[in-house]
Image 1: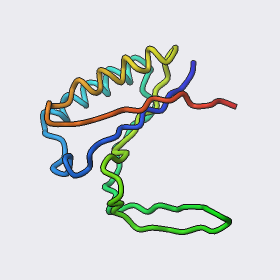
Image 2: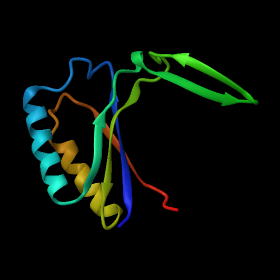
Image 3: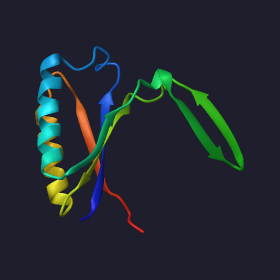
Image 4: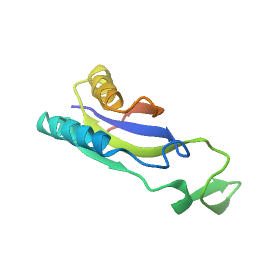
Length: 117
């Protein structure tokens, strides 16, 4: 079965206060359902960009930039690796993930199939 990467994009400044206890409860329930269904292979949130680095290659040179990255408003705040029969199923599970969020959240998931072999 194909695997899919769902990159969770958030507005880091708007999400600075973190998820509510209720959102964490709903997320735990969904993670449990997805795991039991054999769909969820891995998932995690990421630390803020202030704790990250960017490593860039251009013209034969490598540069490293310390976070935070002020030139971007939307950042990858987490990811999931799903195993689904097709893209449509991966998108349905991603929609379920998005629906558990409160209305003040702005979240976008980019879902892409993982190239195999």
